[in-house]
Length: 467
Image (cartoon, rainbow, N blue to C red; front, top):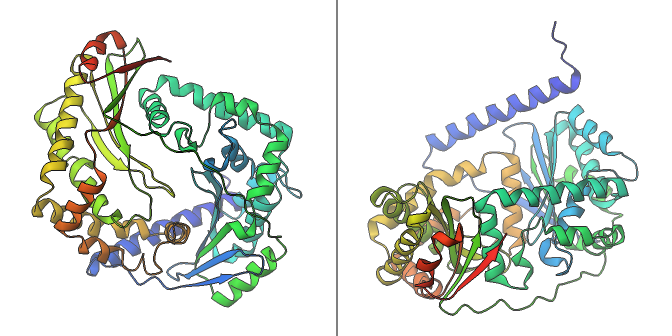
């Protein structure tokens, strides 16, 4: 006979509850006009500088808590890429009162979740559970954020885990292309490496440096706490003050960042991987920051150009030319300027032809803009899909944090779809003129170099790299 433990039962209940929640929200969105329910929240700042955002969301007895710390890979030294990532991964691996296994058992017992993440500009810890366990997960989040012990054994384990993941990237042509593209685009700027870092950087990190990074950046006046769910504002704020009131504020350290290299013409690099019969292609240039005034215009522009099977890029390269099975583009908008990129792949013998088709489509976009029909279709897509990203308490917490972290308007979420619908043809034209630059691009080709080198040289000077 199957034995169901209390922790398993709680998890089953939690999963079923989340599933029902998704069904209810989908039904509500479908029955209305497609608009979002107005986002009502309250903000507070504790005496120690901790920013608190609370959202009452009473559909189900669930609560999500996310702590964002304004410290990511951009805050680590050039010589130690991967430091912020290691710090984040170690948060749940033991504190002053709980061992790693005890942390996992605590969250499993109540059927909740606890996850950590490190990005370029920030790090975060997210926890969810039934609202009756709010105090439990609030205390647990406080414990892992404020009091990690960074034991040598756990450091070695996560260092090896990260290094292994990086080494495995050498078997993945897309991962290779991403690294080289970022390195070419950003030079010595921290955005040149993904947050996981490099093998050299990870090997150089000491325990003292891990402790110091945490001490320097994990501060209440450098953090934002968001609570979304079936909560009461006053009771929630009282619990937060009790739990985090003793967290001491500190002096926030801001990084001094080097300039990004200027791109003049086509900057081409071929990364030689002799076993490849297909070439991975990634090209692009500097894009925008997340708070750019043309964000919505460029989001719609990118949907038209390179998102999904109906986009111009996919239609031309895949459907009409048959050169690839996949092609897409994107603006990776960050705290600072992120990249605009195009990604596709093709057989080695048609790789440069594919690259030329992509460049031609970018030039057409630059010179001819988009049509009214394309813009209307892109708007319709976001009107239909954006509400799906606001279904759960955790999703809402994440959206609220984005709004706060990037300094977006207070009514940003409420007016998101209004902002989409307000984009005009003139807005698109202005954004294209200002941002898109198909004549000055970084181009990364991961391939068997001898099969594409001569054709690539016809486009400009080529740098050849070995893995």
